[in-house]
Length: 479
Image (tube, rainbow, N blue to C red):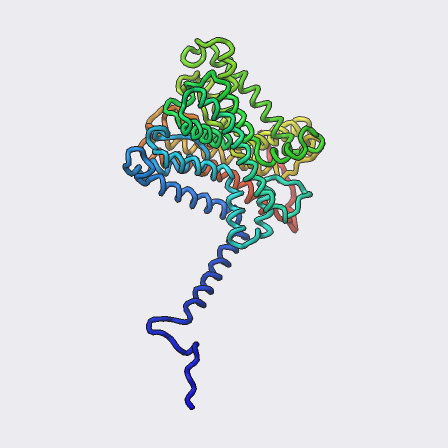
């Protein structure tokens, strides 16, 4: 009897029984490549992830459905808006309220929410999705970004990431519930009041500064029911998740607070109070801003400006109408920024704290830099110096480029550059006046400001290694 052919030996015309195996091999190879990329360079992974997210939102915002007119948005305007949203900056080149449709505004606020979760959180989540688990170095990077205590084990990082997302959503829901009733009382339709409450809550907690109203916050410049939740959202977002976690766990038991939490809260309080006082002194008699208001309204404006200048981006007065002294103060506060691993930008308040502590230690002749009974490692000081120098260099180069491209004044170019680098969003309206080349410069600066200092700090932290030998020591003359 002749044997019948086996199922494996029968092939239909035009088919290849080895195709599934080859696809599995290719998929496995691709996953190994991506996983290896994740483990070897988590900082580079974060950069690539952020760039891909921006590309996605740029393509969506450029679609006709995203604009109110139904026409496609120019690439450079869509790119600028996507970068500003994902980098939670708030700078705009087209009106958020009139240029974008509801769908476009929805895309923008989703981009703000995603960007506000933080580049390192996004990178860690992508790492989990690719390799089903975080690599050791990936976990170390996530721990470093959230400043978890030594007691936290590597296996808890996934839980911490979930806490970050849950905390963000909870705070934003609470802020929305504060704002929606006020918009209803002011006569807005229910659907608009709900949308504006959600939009402002996400925008404020993520320190974005986008407003869905064509005239911004000017109609509410003395309405504390709206201004207080916005300030509260910006303040909480600027503290950072490491500080929020400590406050949720330990509350007012300051003895158990981490050094990072203590430094962040102390410097934030100093900058908030000093910024409000100095802003009030500089603008108290300026008729173009708050000079014609009563004293209580002047105080409200001063406190609001101090909170928003350090990364919030909302404004009640025209920035171009401020005194030059006030603009200089605003530049300093914007460059300082908020807390590490937060939705705020800038060089971060802990960087400033470490540098001043080092200066004080040098002035006293101490060999160690100490704070709250703890010694700060030399490696931390080197990272702080690197972050400051990188930030100043980026701002200087961008300012020079804007001067060449636009021919505007130095004060406007510097203000816009620092606002973009520090992801603040305050503007003298220069962004909207720039040609496409200037918009590309600010887009690159926003991207670099959001991820540059973070990835630099992470890369330097992970690259620390033990040296087998040391060269003879010789101290150069400084100063």
